[in-house]
Length: 390
Ligand code: PMP
Image (cartoon, rainbow, N blue to C red; front, side):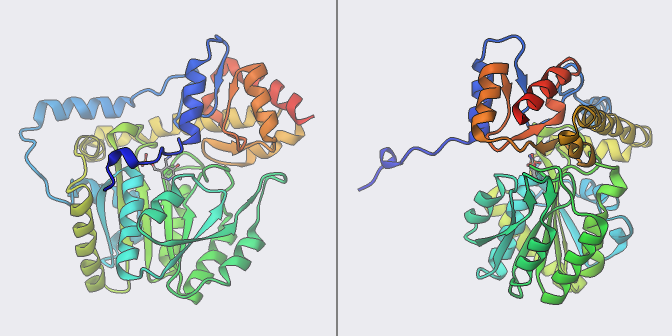
C-alpha cells in the first residue's frame, strides 16, 4: 500500500526560487525585477486609498458574514460587467460570476470546457504565463502550443500564430492574453485581434481571454478592446478577469468569469455547471476583497477616484518603460510594450551573471518587471543590462 511518504518531491516553481534567492542576498543594492506585483518609486506595493476607504465602510456597516452561496457577491459581478464588457454589458447572452482571483476564473473556465468537451485541445502561445499549462492540465485538457513571440527580435510571431490556428479543430480553445501580455509585454494590434477573431469565428474555435491587467497598459477602455472584439465576432467566448492588479488586492483573491453563448437559455444552463464546478472546488469565493471592490464601484465618491489611482500605477509603468527605452536603441522596444513585464534577449548565463555581479534578480527567461525597479535603481539596471547585451 502506498502512503503519503511515497509522494515524490514537487519541482519547485522557478519564480518562487528566485524570490527566495533574492531574499537571501545580503547586498543592500539588490534589485528585484522577478517580482510579479506593482511597486511604486520606493519599492512599495501600497493598498489603494479607495480600497482602504471601502474597507473602513465595510468594517462599519457589515452586519453578517453568513454564507453568500457559490455565486459569491452578485453585485460585484454586476459592477465589473460594464468595465469589462463595455457595449456588451447589456447582452443577456453573457453572464458573469465572482471567482477567487484570475486563477480561479481560469480554472473554472477550463473546468466548464472539460465538462462539455473533454476532447477539446487548448492552443496556448509560447511563451505564456507559467501557471497556464498546469491549470489546463489539471482539468485533463490537452495543450497545443502556437508560436507567439520572438524574444531575439522583440516581435509577435503573428504569421506563425495564424498558421498554427489554421490547424485548430472546431471546438478547440484558443487562450489569449487580453492585454499586457505576461511574460512578454507584446500585445496584439487591433488588426491582429480582428484577424484572430475571424479565425475563431470561421473555424468555430472557442476563445478564452485571460485579462489580468486591465488598466495597466493604455487605459481601462483600450485594454478591454480585444475582449470586446472577440465578443462582437464569436458566438461563444469565455473571459477570465482579475481585479488583483488593478485594485491592488492581490492576496484577497478577486476575479470573475464571464461567459457568452449563442442564447440566453444556453448561458443560463452553462452557468448552472459553472456553479456546480465552483461548489466542488471552493464552495464559494472569498468575500472580503470582492466586497471592498464592490464598495469602491458602488460608492460614487470612490468610483470617481479609482481611475485616477489606477492611472497613477499605469503612468509609473509607462514612465519607467520610456526611461529604459531611451538609454539604448536595443532597448527601444520596451517603450512600445505594455504592462509590467518585458523580456530581455539574454542567455541564461547572462541572466545569472547579472545576478552574481550586479545583484539583479530576474527570471531565467529574461522576463523582468519594469516597476520592480525603484526610481533610484533604473540607471544602474539599464547600465548593467546594456553591458550584458554587448
Ligand atoms: N493571468 C495572468 C496572465 C497573470 O499574470 C496572472 C497573475 N500573475 C493571473 C492570470 C492570475 O491572477 P490572480 O489569480 O492573482 O488574480
